Image (cartoon, rainbow, N blue to C red; front, side):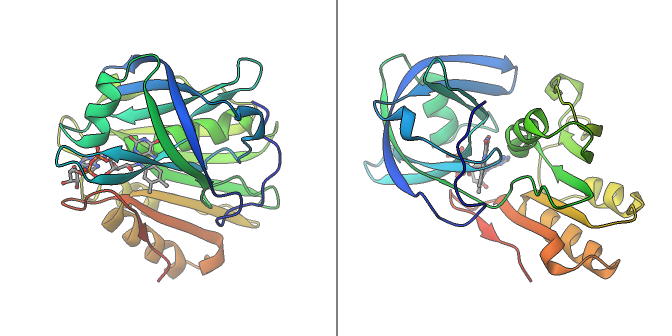
Amino acid sequence: MNSTEPARGGKANLRDWTLRVVAGRDVEPNMRRVTFTCDDITEFSYQPGQAIVFFLTLPNGETGRRHYTIRSFHRSAGTFDVDFFKHGSSPATNWARLAQPGDAIVARGPRGKTTFDPAADWHLMTGDETCIPAFAHILETMPEGARAFVFLETSGPEGEIAIETKANAEIRWLHRNGAAAGPSDLMFKSVEAFELPAGNGRALIIGETSNVRRQRHALIARGMSREQVSSEGYWRPDRVGGHDHVDD
Ligand SMILES: Cc1cc2nc3c(=O)[nH]c(=O)nc-3n(C[C@H](O)[C@H](O)[C@H](O)COP(=O)(O)OP(=O)(O)OC[C@H]3O[C@@H](n4cnc5c(N)ncnc54)[C@H](O)[C@@H]3O)c2cc1C
């Protein structure tokens, strides 16, 4: 991975990219990986953890916006990957399932504050399947020795992936045992049981909006400052596309 250095977070560098599909395949049963390229790929710079917003043509002919994380970047090949969690039959998942080499789609970005903070002594990262691309990419590019405590929620063991990292990372997988993703106590209880290490910590809390909000509030109640907890709702039941700011 060779990202150049855009500003951390915020909406710097937002522009539109006309992407072409290079390939698509399942990396695990519920995750579809689509590889993209574009003519101006050498100008594409981002921070691991950042996302782009796809402009999808919906069944009714309107345009829908869907956020997806850059999963990995292959600078020498001039391509990057995006992993789509197949949570059901929906515009983005259906688009990814059917994507064929040569298909074109416009995306805007990159954007987002879910990125590695080199000033932090330790990093707590929590999220569900939609967050695996962000955390896997951050972990794969974290410097040697950085301390990370990672909680990832999946339906079951089949949703786990191998993550290579030089960081000093503890990765714990939480299984819903087949239950649907959504508001639950699963991640909240794990974060409550997590003993905050000494030093300047940074929490990246993403996933289903109500789960994210509960964790944020609990971490702040335990002494983390609002600035130490970056949180964003990636989806929630019945919301279509978009994202939720969770900064209260
Ligand atoms: C910054 C950011 C980065 C993201 N990165 C990724 C990523 O890399 N990979 C990824 O898979 N997702 C990612 N997401 C989440 C993704 O954008 C949403 O899940 C989005 O709603 C999917 O669009 P859709 O067309 O499949 O479903 P929509 O048309 O948006 O929604 C249809 C229905 O499905 C429900 N739904 C949406 N997502 C889920 C879900 N995960 N589980 C269960 N039900 C759901 C909705 O509540 C709604 O009822 C990201 C979100 C944000 C904000």
